[in-house]
Image 1 (cartoon, rainbow, N blue to C red):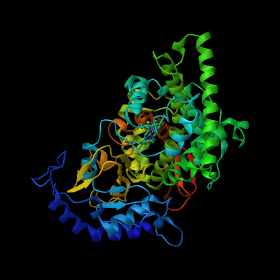
Image 2 (tube, protein in one colour):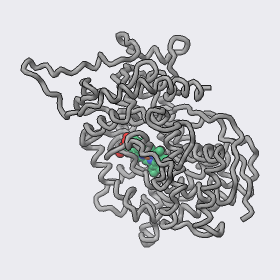
Image 3 (cartoon, rainbow, N blue to C red):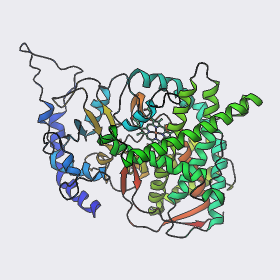
Image 4 (cartoon, helix red, strand yellow):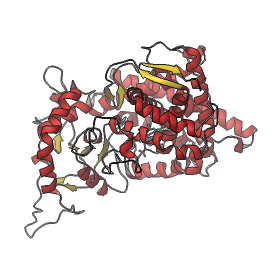
Length: 516
Ligand code: HEM
């Protein structure tokens, strides 16, 4: 239904928007120029259209049940209402000044004017928790820290994540884990309406366990499926941390007393901290007794780095557990959803995979991965329609100019990439799943705006593990489609936003074994 209404309104808006976009393509200067009277000639932030704001509560009433028509867990739908009602730039004041930016040219302008230490206003309560534990943490961690402290962390750990050789070195171990997973699906005989997300979470815990820490959680074993097991509690603690972040960021009561949501965050962070320290001590002991080059994990590379602070490593380990499991499991869920609903795409994928892996058990190598163009375009297309983040958030470190408006330092800018990626103004037939639009060699290639789909963010603050995450998803899809034909058993899959976009109903799939 939502899809239908969206398409109708999109079409009605299309002509108007095309005229607007041509009229307003103006060059953006870095600094506001002032005339002799000191008047910059720029419009004020308050003049940007948006819902009415009241003293003290700002626009928070829009999120209240019965009174407001925004839903704190449906940010994609709020974005849609904002775009429909107010246009390309929308001002909101739910406690802080927020600017929603919808068009790719404007999104580009935001990033082009970003500070050298791009900042986000998120994970505020988690930062509060960590800085109050100075025996364990030096900072709030990479996710929540801003300014020079953030850069110190980022530059310490970046090369371990992003170096092409380092990423490739994880292909073999990841493939081993995924092969086991595929074997497990064959044995398990999943029922048609079971939620496959439950198992994708386990798979991604297992993958990040070996890649990041050289640690197997054995989360598919009988005992680990128990809700009290280490795997189950780690997955729950990662979700428990992530799911409260957005609401805690909006609120402030937790600063004065421990609200139930803050308590949940504390419990989850306590658990992730405990697990990280146990693994860290185990690795340090291992290195004392063995040669270090037998361990290719990220943690080994952190420990081998000169002058690295052990408390920064603990923070990084907890951030990895928080950032790796849900994001990758949700992205894989949406990719499987789209593939299963588009049999032609599935067949093309299968043909490409078989051409590189003629035997089911043939090894996946970095060279093979680099040649799987169609599979990679499937991932891009799925992330266009279903990015885990609705867009990218930035806390402005200086005044910037967008479309003749002066946007003051301190404003939270949210780029609305998910919504923009679903508008016919920027993409042909936007709600259709067409991986070919990403393939230069295809007649259906579209030269999409480079700032339209940004599932991993942009610039120096973008996802530190992008290559690793893409590689993990690619290996998972290759192994699943090589082994099974998949079918979708559910309805239209939407999202609920708990910081990131989670499937709003069970990921219900059938797996039909392929004969060869
Ligand atoms: C499909 C999977 C993933 C997606 C879509 C994703 C997406 C994102 C996005 C949108 C950001 C914010 C970027 C920005 O502000 O410009 C981010 C940041 C981050 N991601 Fe990922 N991510 C994924 C997987 C992972 C994994 C597997 C890890 C860890 C192993 C990870 C660790 C991080 C960290 C630590 C940051 C904060 C970086 C910083 O602030 O400097 N992510 N990710």
